[in-house]
Image (cartoon, rainbow, N blue to C red):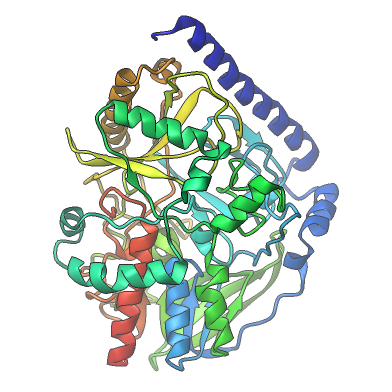
Length: 548
């Protein structure tokens, strides 16, 4: 610690923020969740007042569809649109609600004092700030699925991960892509056709200069200054954010959201150009695609005649079961995310519902090497906490890894910390297994896997802090690294193993994997969303062209 006085100031600020958040979280628990975790009547009234749209009666999907798409995230949304454009009627099933946007209403809750709108039917959460929060159970947008050794953050909302991610959409370098995919996918076609297609559809671009210079992005400028002092040249990140909405936040023409550390639990004003504003909307506008929120898929099977049977539970936002049905389709597209898709396939294989699945089902799962880090700032300043990630660096001094500038969720003021998301080119993989007694699918992530990636990312971040004369050493305080979670689960039905090279599941014609489950545990030191979307574009194009 080079500046003892400055270090004391920064520690006080950081722990004051953490303590305030803990106190408020405890207050929320006292008001919100009864002994059983059921929604308190007061909170039920508040949820209905804040977001009445999600309490509207839910429509019922047709008993039979030519195609069913399970999920509504990046891969699923691409699939729905391209099928619809090809004249193939499709039904999109999503367990979560379809949340609206509004320039002034607080549609979504925040990380600072979250309530049930933030989380999928749970009553407590501990995020990267390591401050426990408590709240009433509700059908919120973030599902934290807990396995031994790892928590997996995934979406539960129409639009999937596009509603809750931090917006960075970056293509990996060719050499890392080839290392991960091993020739199953040709990088050249991704680079020349599918990455550009997605960039155009989602209007991706780096942060404009006027916003980079604005006060909410002081932390981004400080991050860039530190890595330059350490000998790196920061690389710009493309983002899905609508920059005009962020300008409006600063100008006071819309409620602040993305400029005040809100993103993980949604942006109420629509600051992210999420899938509800593009792929899913365009799919519905064709008249050939219909989206059904509140429909959780519990199991899939193939009938003797070749049709697929999909068992669904219709849920109210409170978690109340409205009904259970079995739907059928001629073709079934899995886009429920790495965990959701893998669970359905592993269970179907174990129970004999899909008896011809091969030995690779459930295999190849990884965390994309995610590590959250914090290092001390180099000087006292009123750092803002604008969400969009401005830049990244690549380090290959040991294992290849990227550090990406990040923000501190839920704390939109000075903490003395500069946050990073590390993504390590990590070879560790796990396999989903089936527990017959509980009819449950799970996995285990080893302590060694976690410790290895933390050590690699921490070493780089520590070196930057030293060379940039950071005022405080967060490693000594235990706040510098968190690899107990991943927001980038990948694998479980890997392309070229569980499926052919375009996502057709081996052994069951008419069944396809279209999401992050197809990716072998990593997207080569960058955020997976762009690669998931581009692969879905590539694969559905081949499937439609071939007619199967």
